Length: 498
Image (cartoon, rainbow, N blue to C red; front, top):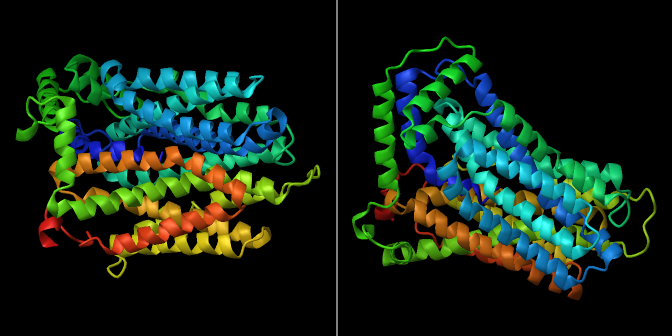
């Protein structure tokens, strides 16, 4: 979910224009923080966030028991780990195309239904290959559904409540991770024995709830109808939202909706690349033009540092989640006792490290002495220091558990600050491409991560954490090379002020 939030950042300008027009004309929720219908949408997106965090945690947490029961090799672990992140990427690629053609509601219903079916069938597969196939289908659906859900949330959330809603929604990812930890505690006495199939089945419950709520309570996005020119359908949806929120319906002339529709269609065309140098260009040619812009003299230092930062973010974050159960298994090679739940507690503790991050980040980045740049430096330095301490000193026990807590906390902090910082670094005409390329480089880190950490884990139990520490220290130094901070600087002027 962390990388896919970029999809929302890139679409915010158009969404804000849409909500501004809509609120001015029909006063949707102008006197309430969130209406009943918006709460339905919020719950749906929250459940999808739980699916994302839960499935990521479940895949890594069952590796030790699959290795014992099916003799899963290191290369098979690495292959599944890479294919999972490729699945996320492929799903997100097709998400926008499908949702723009068939609508947000149908996209959410279809993908959540397929997610649930794949989760249940995959949990009862008799061998690793069939299990892997269904898990890949599952995470592809997760990658597909997240951008759609965030678009749905942004298109239906009042402007004045969007900030806190977007902050709060991030906690559902951690809630999904913690839910899987709880299920593991209930069904598995340790990481190498117990009913892992039950864990996977119950972990799919948010997908089922998403499917049911979307079927019975979710309406199509009025913005989708307007962007398609379906003004009658848009007006009907708006009236239903009024009724669900117990508000008196407002009679709006159909030509008002037509004017809004025309304005949104115009904005959409502008955001699809009507820059002069991209007109009449093929997709590949436009891609190359944007790529070259990012590497021009005034942007090359920013771009290279940002790409490396995002590579480190995903490599370390995904690496810790993927590697931790394997590390705990190596630390306890003997046959565990029936009540040996210490490993599960350590994994749970690592998830808890993410909870305070968003609120802390919101405060620190707006303090002058820290800002965005220094906050990022401190977060990478923290990851580097903790990773190196684990590699040099750790031998298991409470020290290792506490260090994992701080490692997850610092890397989550760097992720959170990176979203805001990168969205402010580039001028408006390059912001979408800047975020898009950074996201792609970040995905590369998660895709190659399993092959590296599984191999290094065989050489030394804590060596991978040392690698996390080294590359994070380099990221901290690279952050200092950025020519400016964006704290209290106007957008589109930060480059000229450097």
